[in-house]
Image 1 (cartoon, one colour):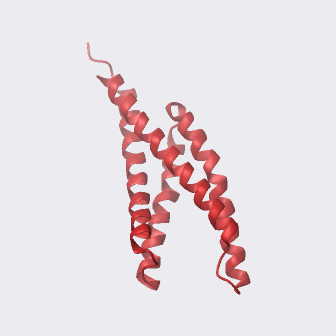
Image 2: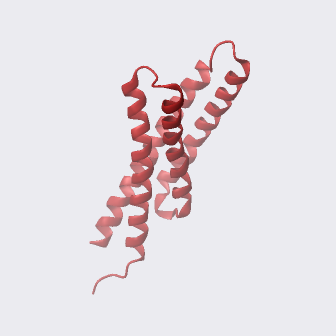
Image 3: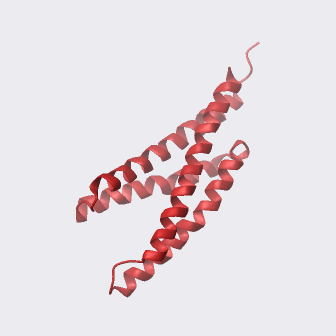
Length: 136
């Protein structure tokens, strides 16, 4: 039973990390090529820098997904920026209003919260199950 729950929880973590890696790579590339607001050199510079960082996270997320059974606290550290991204979107919505199309941006924020929570929950479950003594 414990092996099944560990496998299921590990699969959830792996899928969430791979999804986060795909989002980081795709969205980071889009942001890097698109740039920031036109005519605002400082904003464009910061925007493209953050896009590069976002792209740089993709291989780390994919590697952690591939090696998730050997990972401990690193997985939690990877979930934090995903959660912070969702919080950043909420702050932006509150301060500057809803971008268009609203549904896409709301879905992105929801996905960031769901991914972060699922990663932490499933990884914690897998680690606890691996440590639990086998029933006789």
